[in-house]
Image (cartoon, rainbow, N blue to C red; front, side, top):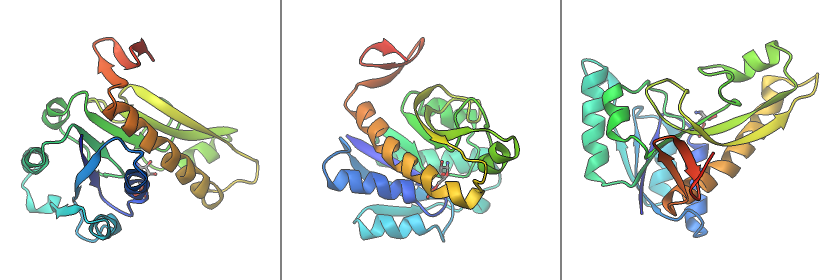
Length: 203
Ligand code: GRF
């Protein structure tokens, strides 16, 4: 089973997937890592693991459609069963999302459907929430709006700050993303016509 991972930055989630693969716990092989930013540290993580690391700078393309068209070509060259977004900071076109429908996962730092979009930690803290978390979801046309397949919660204390929660958020992401990927590659997790299913049961 073949996985392509898209990143834009640090790639700590990519690292969690690489580590899971090295323990034989990913259920597949990361065959390529693609970044729209040349200075993404995750590219180095990929190279260190002997994985093909590709840079596709979005600013070299005239518009979103042209970039996504090029991205599709690079991804399809690697014939993936699953495309994993791991901190890929680009809004994807409907064309792209349709192409990989049902085999495109993202991780988002909030308990979706709450707090879609950017700066989730600041907004959650500003609202005085006592609970926060992370979500893995299938990607659909609606930004951060696709069906959720897995979440991990985080209890917040009154004196929590963005700095104090970031590590706990990442720990949860690194815990659940490899599991979601493995369940998908094992065929347990699927996106059916009525929504995501696990072992044939609607989530
Ligand atoms: C993560 O917090 C993820 O939820 C969000 O982007 C961040 C990527 O972090 N989509 P990293 O590059 O994996 O360290």
